[in-house]
Amino acid sequence: MPTRSAKPSPLLVAARSSPGLETILRQFQAVQLEVVLAATTDAAVALLMGNPFSAVVLDAALIRNDDWTVAKSLKLIKPNIPIVLLDARRLGDRKALPANIDVLISSDDPNEILVKIRQLIC
Image 1 (tube, rainbow, N blue to C red):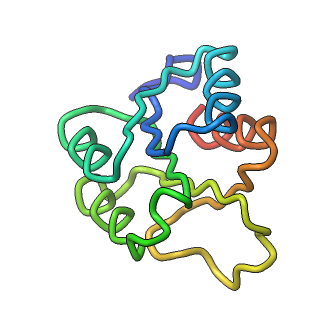
Image 2 (image 1 turned 120 degrees about the vertical axis):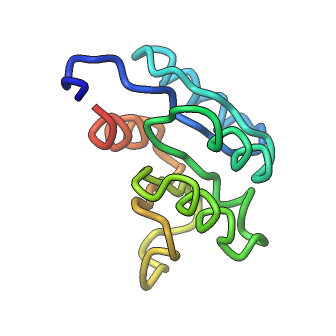
């Protein structure tokens, strides 16, 4: 069993390229969190099937029309993997977490994203 000081497995990030994503990725790099970027939900599912990841970070804009089936697919592959949803919309507008999503974080604050993901995986 890994200790807390062991380097975590990479994060799997499924997101569209954007200036906000670039900022978040730089934050991860600064603290030496390894990231594997999936440009599509299909790519995220395929990558998870054969690789160890500490968590999956999903961009809500990428999966909004997917009816959250990607989160269900990811949980079917690895039931215990934490799935984080980054959403630019006001979080208070949500009544509950979407199915199979473990953590909801506003994508407006890269520092908050980094803190919450480090708490989740380290």
